[in-house]
Length: 429
Ligand code: SAJ
Image (cartoon, rainbow, N blue to C red):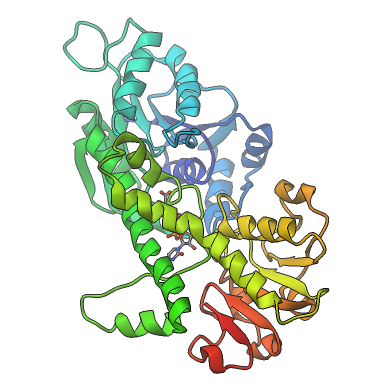
């Protein structure tokens, strides 16, 4: 039974804001905390500063009803949910800078008895160290009951929601809840029970931390298998989409889809935390990362090969910049890497980028003067070689005839994928 009535959510990004809004929609008073003044202003006006289906209505309603407010200072609360970025450092180990900054905001507010939940993805031991760090800042408190000082309760509850389906998955997914202490796990379970309809699975913090990393590594390894197959198929002149479709008819085979590489801030990042902590033991996980990281370069080579049968001034279309379909998130996107690489290598060619979810090219393109943002139709019309990098609905809706006479580097299998070399377009999968 949850007894917590006021929660501070520190970090109002893709995970923090939906969590804050859903908790508030269940009648819990939520104070959102973020450094970004524009994010704060947007939320207090009942708006959402990024694209996520269904989130806008829940935020607006929670703000209108007075259950959700946002500010830059961390207030006193009964529970704190930390959902800040955990990028990696140059050696691929975790950068805990933002977790520490969150802890520095929380520490002065603690009185003892509070629940502190780390949702950010992090290697085993991070939640325990967050607890230790809080105790260093507040030596009058302890991490466990029975140590003669008021205790605070620290838990790790990794988020597992899929961008694009966050509002649905936040409620329906099962949740792993890892306590630094058993009391922390129970308190966290009761809080998540307020909105989570999935199973709430209790364990220790380190197991919860590793489980999250393992889930994303599992997916990374399986995508790497599909990406490797697409390169192998290219060598044998086989259509990889047909190959996978046929192989998946086997009752125990379920191969994922190849693509231009793996993007986003999770699958392309989290496996490195395992490799950094166990470099000798994580050979498969490391190799999968390397296979997926090498894929954009392979796609660029296919585009360069396609250009050979066109005149010197033939232009290139890049369809999609987001890291996956129907979102506006460009973080760690292989498509951005491919478009930039093409622009740098071919300074005399025009690169026509079509990304229906943005209105200006991101800053990374400031250094280029041969890249332009146009509509999907216009990009294809202007170009000899078309690189299909994201399977947005707008890209899937293209009339196949538009590709006639063009070389198509189709990394998503949307262009008449069964006809391959026999189609009117030259396909490179
Ligand atoms: N991709 C492929 N082929 C596939 C599937 C995906 O190339 O068959 C690519 C996508 O194009 C994209 C990347 O992989 O570039 C990642 O996309 P995704 O949809 O697989 O996953 P994310 O990064 O959006 O979300 C993942 C999810 N993790 C798992 O499915 C194990 C999500 O549940 C996590 O909550 C999220 O990471 C996270 O925040 O960790």
